Image (cartoon, rainbow, N blue to C red):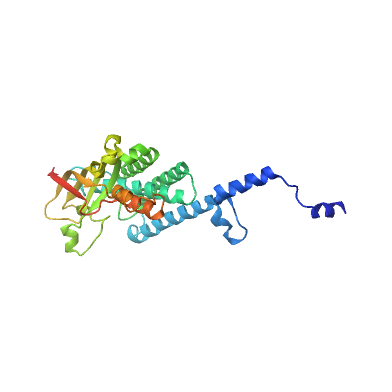
Length: 298
């Protein structure tokens, strides 16, 4: 029968189509989808959805265990203030909220890009997810028995998330500015034998760092390119509560460890996963012994 005869004929040769398909497979291996159970792994949208779902589920699980274990009640709000001396944590918690959302954008964007998203799409997805998660946490706090919704926390989340978006969107700004957490265990935490970088507000210093390597006139200088100017804020005696409460401003010099590693250890492997991971960590956290800060009490 004609139908059977046509089915047995070889497909017509199209060198142009075959060449294009071969080139596409070589340059965009993410589009080469095998059959069988591994198909989902080769779909960037599915991989991204799995990653984001797992991240949100992880935060929800942690919150259920650590934050909302007492259950929920009617929605309540409160005004916590910002950075005044009379606030519960001296404003360190507000910077903690901003840093959390900022970290979510930075880490999420890098992970999503590694999963196959374009840089622009990865940044948009990470920003939307981070803002949604941190806003959702604050709303659930409003329903929890132990906490209340705080507009200051919500605004700090938005500020941190948008800062992460803007810095990653504009590489020249990203090369110049970092927002970092510098942690040293506080006496109160040490007395309780606790090492809690994200809960020990007395041991936290939040730093806005300006990198000489991000200034074209200084980037080529052999020594100056490794220096950074740091401005910071921190509190003492707030939470865990101490004998005397105080708020502090900081000014100092730091070493650009990430730049030093790029020029030595990662000189020939700038695109390696280890280099990207260490670079992200050093953008977010100031290592002990790499910064000298002058302290002014407010």
